[in-house]
Amino acid sequence: MMKEWYLQQTPRDRIIVIVVGILVLLALLYALVWHPLTSGTETAKRNIATKQENLTFIQQAIPVLEGQSAVTGSGLDPELQKLEAFQLVNALVNRQQLQPPPDRIEPAGSDRKGARVQFSAVPFDQLVKVLAEIELYGYDITTMTITRQTKAPGAVSARFNVEPI
Image (cartoon, rainbow, N blue to C red; front, side, top):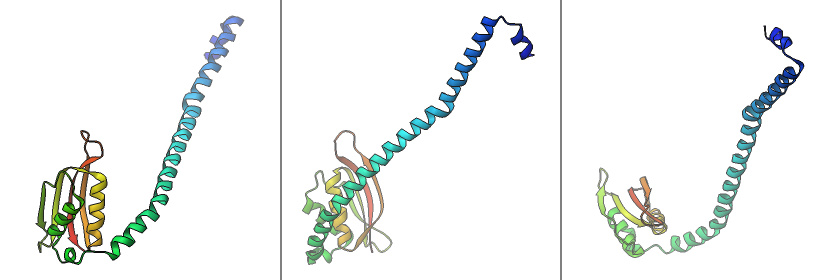
């Protein structure tokens, strides 16, 4: 049926049908094969570049962090080592001078030796320092929720639980 229709066309119309058919075929090849391959490759290259940047940053940060942990690890305050979790968190927050202060620090856990802490807005970098110190004193951050604050750059709201290791 298609062959009969094609043969009934004038030679000029047959050439137009062939050219349009080739253009449609090329458009389909581009849309279904070439474009997905190239865009996928570009996305993969961007992902690799981002991961390499992250790796470089982490590799540069390791010596700094190891140096800090060596200094703070040997110089733990014996007075702070005696405190319960909620008292320790409060002392470390005060020592780091976190502003604004936490909304809530309260004892938690079945034995009340843990702590539940909540900040509505706190500088992320300072919060991480406090969390690292908490772990140096033998406590573990068991659950944590951090949400970026859009009003203050670098600030987050945070909620976490501290438990003895």
